[in-house]
Image (tube, rainbow, N blue to C red):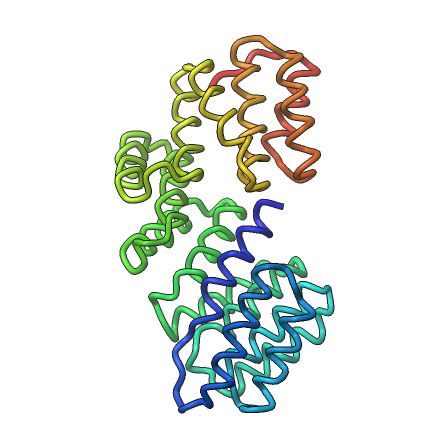
Length: 285
């Protein structure tokens, strides 16, 4: 759930404001923009109506075809989505958004290698297209290529420093590589740029866990868990379970892990914490 919601946010950030190579009717631009806003709200019926009319004004409107495909993908109509994304790519292969959209679709279908290829195609067109670079990095991280992920997250901090996911992803990769001092420095830079961002605060709490400051970590995590972002709430609850395990509260750890799994049944940290709580082994982070 976290990954899917985060991918949608990246999709929205990358697909709705791409450069255009030919003049477009002002009405088509307005309708596509308003349709994108409706997608972000989850109002797919309104979004479809607006974007379909935008395509009536301009059938070669690449962004509108990508957004129409996004609607179909959100509805689960994956073949229709593929048709629309390919249409967009064929109309203008020199825009990164259609390639990125095809990557999202491949990832949705569980085709990690194909997704990575499409993300790389997007970056060949525009190396500064952050959504594709971040999703490529996350895919590498998930497959265990932590050094490859670190490299892509690092590049994101250079080409798109306004994206918090580049900084937090880089910190995650550095931690996995055992480069804790570098991770601390990266986290400090992220804090300076993004302030009390939930992503930054979540990482700071995890740093506290690594240093055995379980009570302080739990206090920070409980604040994040109360926020409306379900993805961040699930992550906070899963690490809260780890914090409670660290101070021997297996009953509290079980409660937090179960709440996290209710929000995201695939949360690996929560599943681990729940199994650990039931087996009651000692843990350290």
